[in-house]
Image (cartoon, rainbow, N blue to C red; front, top):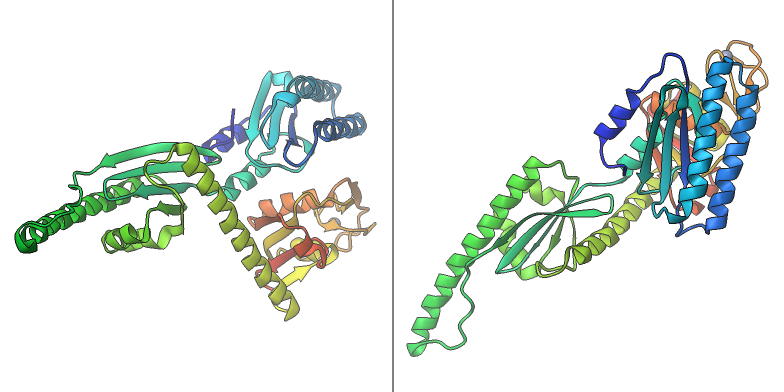
Length: 381
Ligand SMILES: [Zn+2]
């Protein structure tokens, strides 16, 4: 099954077993960025580490056996199917004791991890879903219009329309009188054609929840349709496609993906610029692991920024769940803190639990100077 909707995530998070725990497994399988050998090695290491962790866990034998079987099944699945998998990521949720197994192919890479918990750990799925925009693409000319729904690398034709605008006349009649009349006649038809397109666009847009509109038409046709479009629709137009109604869906998809990538990069540049300027003037922002964890513990964080695939060990207070880089004793309750294999992962989970926004920064160089992690704050104590 492919990740495609919030509903899917909600259904998955409803699964709960009274007697057993669930294994949630995430693997980056992006063959554009890694060779097969690297992917195999990373899943083997991940499973090995978690097998060790499982042995040390203080839970009933029955629970342990079910989790151990989960890991075996996942291992078997990966060794059989990874080479034929063409998705950027893979998620598996398993609870052998309850006969539960669900596999989800992901359109972008998650952080590698295994989590044992009562429920399936679905936050990374929400992060991926939020990264993708639902795009409404419209290609049009004086004869035709086509509307598409584009989401997570897939394109669906929603509607197509062929107008009845007569073709242009080359020669005018007597002293151009005839040609003027025909021109007016064509102009009326053209106006009706664009009006129909504008109306259909509004109807389709209302019926679906799109984030962005991409238009594929020449400047001339845009100036025809622009006055007819609802102001709300105009505000949603995010870019121009080099595509015409005659182009194949594959071409429209490719063009849209190029544009989406460009827009996302632009968006990321802008938000990082805002973060850096806030940091430099000492405003409502922090950077670096120590300071960011402190703000997270205090509930000050509004948006958490992380460099993609950044991970580091740290410590957690078992009582307050506060996160630390190296505190052996929790300053708040004085308890001894526990070791965490990956404190960044804990920070991500804590941020999501507290309803903070999380942004994965794909251009790592931009945050390196700031300790690979930072946040916008709601307030500062
Ligand atoms: Zn504590």
